[in-house]
Structure formats: C-alpha cells, structure tokens
View 1 (tube, rainbow, N blue to C red):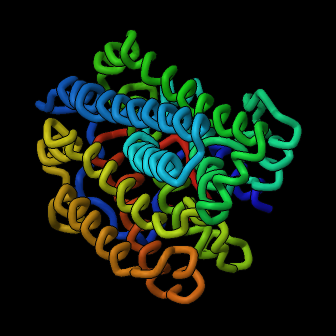
View 2: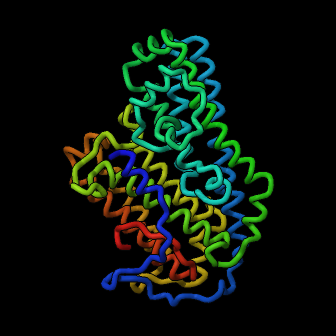
Length: 367
C-alpha cells in the first residue's frame, strides 16, 4: 500500500485543471500579455536569488553531512553521532527550500524522488545492508535511500544502540556512506547544470506558455506543493488522502527522529514564501501587483500572503509531534490541511488565471 500511494503521487496526470462551478475565484480577466512587467527580471531573481542560492546551501549542507559521516565512520561515538545527526537535520531543512523546483535539471535527475521518498522501507534497507548493496540507482530503491533512509539509520534506536550497530557492522557503515554519496551526487548534478548554462536559458525563456520559464515554474511549484507538502507532509499521515480515511502516523516525514516533522513543514512554507517574494527581490508578488490581480474584490497578492500566515498559524497550533497529533489531535491536523488546500487553490487556479498560464496536470481533489 505504501508504494502504491507514492506511485499515485509521482505519476503526472496531464490534463488541464478546471475550477469547481461554485468556487469563488479571481475577478482578474485572463490576460493575453505580460503588460508592462519585466518578466526577465522575475526569472533572473528566481534563478539567481532563489534557486541557485537554495541549491548552493543544500549542496553545502550535504558536503557537511558527508564530512560528518566520515568522522562518525572513522570513530563511532556519542560526539561524532551528535555531529552527524545535526548535519542530517540541516540537510533536511535546506532540502525544503528547493523541493518545489522539480523542472529542468531537477526533473532530468529526478531529484525529489532520489532525495525524499518516505516512509522509507526499513525492511529493504536491512536487506540491502545484509547483502552489502553497492548500487542505489534502480527505481525500486527510491524508498531505501535519501534523507528518510538516513533518518532511519541514525534515529531508529537510542544513540548507544545506533553506535553499536555501526561499530559491529562494516556493511552498515558501507550503506551509510553509500546513501550520503548518492544524495550528494544527484544534488551536485542539478546544481552544476544550473551553474553551467541552464540558468541563462531559463532567464531568457520569457512568456507564459507551458514551456516558458514562468510556465515551468508554476507547474512545478503547484505539483510539488500539492503532492509533497500538502499531501505528503499532512494529508497522507492524517488520513485525508487515504481511501479509508485512516490516520497513518508511520507516514510522517522524519518518522524516526519524531519531533521535527512540523519544523520541516514550516521550513517548506518559508521556502515557498521566499520563492513567491523572490527572496525579497523581484517576486511573483510584484507581477501580480503590476497586473492589479484581484481576488474576491481585494488584492490577490494580499490574499496569498494572508493565506501563508493562516497556514503557518495552523501548523504552529499543533504542539504535539505530528505522528502523535494525527491520532490524538486530528481536528487541528485537519484544520491545517484545509488551510494548505486553500493555499493550493490560490496558486493552482487564481494565479495561473491572472497570469495566463495553463496548469498541465491535475490531482484528484477536484481543484
């Protein structure tokens, strides 16, 4: 069932999204041109101040993770394990800033799938360790590697037990190094592609067609937000996206560390806000303001920024670890999901309508 759920999330459905007949939508007419707004300045800001900055930070954190792994494997101890766990945590956080950008080089290297498919398959991980697996490239291995696999390897038992496991098993040490190397390799290829030419072509790709820079960006952000933020982080664990409506606490992000799932969600929302504002330079907010895009009689930009606040507040209202909250505080978790869904609709329906961008996929929630 676990792999079926994630396959459903990963397969793009290439149809044009439609609004529900009764949905209150934007009053801005569907534009045919960009007006006076300089689209290239927006693409430049996204490329230089958001995407490349994000990949540089994430790759740097993965390099630190690799160094911490080397230190731990050379001398497994409480101190080196603490350093490794801290480095893993930082890499998990920096991943949240780039997870939305699954187009171009990231799509070519399926970065999202290679970095953060969860829940991780602990049974297969242990089989891989027993067999001293040396290759994680097969598609069947996506839920046996990445940040979630490291979460299992570093947190599935208390610290003393984790240290002993690695001290007593060369295969386990090899597997830890293999997972870190795989993460670093995929991210490095994407980062290098942006730095070696893709950034320039992206910045020059003005317009609002499906293949334009803005079209690629909005389609990617919408797909990644719906599948891996709204659903992956909240909807699936809470049971909202389960056919039977049953809570799935073992499907939260960072299951084994246990108390950082909400922190990762908040980091992903912060990353999305940075993207929306162009990291405080030229942002999508400026484009919508330039177009005088409206929503229910007010500013669409104001509506979006207010919805970010509502999402953050709903997340912070949940004080328990998410794996507990989906069982014992489900009302608050469901309220969070509803706020995330409202944000999804703004970006999937109202923003594309204002800009003249077609969203070329649709999930099954009827947006």
